[in-house]
Length: 404
Image 1: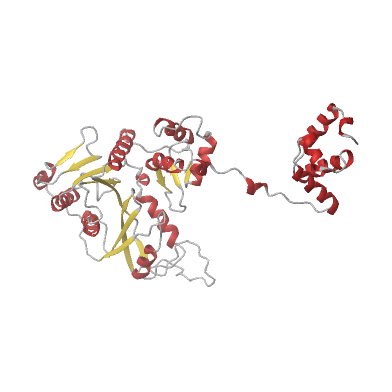
Image 2: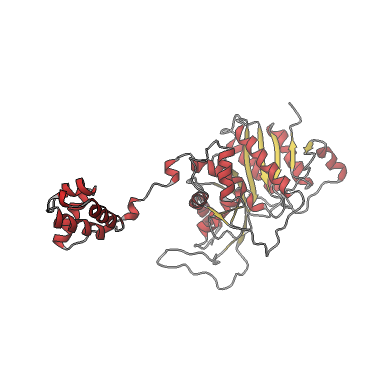
């Protein structure tokens, strides 16, 4: 059939029909049209209907061989937004991280965040300088959050959220001080916390393993051979993590001893640092009214010459402290094995990774005494040394060295 004999209305109908088909069915259709009215000439099909001659030829071959090609559409997909805008993932992390908490049960590595995808998108515009047109929609931001490990969950109104009147103000203070610390070359921000005691023995930890021969645990959790108290010191700016395992009990002295050991080991890396900003929860051994803790921290300041600023998270919100995320990774890492000895526990802790970085692990074999407190008269010396925030006196405390 000659091309000029095909009426324009017929051409339009044939082309519109082809557009409604896809894959092998579309190729079969355009191949049949090409063979019947265009003498099987793929170039004519391209000139008359705009169909790709490569696709037409492929359809003709499929008709001749009766072998259909399977299209791998999923492999052709559009690039993820993070690949199109390389800095986007980093900017989202900087917005979301301060508002994220670890899984309270340490069962997953997801972080639960209290900021919505809509708020993240708006913050990218307000704080990071993005325009509305260059950012993806709210749903895509939500998908990116999930891919980055932040699981969005709504607070269920059936369960009351424990808060104190100062909770929102405390969080605002945490975020503000975090930004100031991270922007200063002379300030280092730390996140410090202890983890629940780890029982040493042939006890099941309710984890899973891919080992062919499964280890067998005791059927009852009898008295452990030993107990370890993990204390973590985390540097959010560079993902450096130190874990010090104590063999005694958790006390203020134990926590400050861990900090002193960490500083002695790492002060060479931080020769420019003049101030430490430490994020803490409001635990009984480290709160700002704990006399022995304040005494030891003041002594640490005088010994090192560092300015120390203690920034606390509000009660019932300790899981927002960045170190808690590291504990979740550790639990998932070693839950599939039996921590049958102290050496094995330390070895397993040393092989976990946080953002590709392995922690430095130490053992602190010192016996600590419970219940050490200072009298009001003795404490007054140290209370006079510290500066408390006017609006949040228990949640923002600064200690300066006696000299300089």
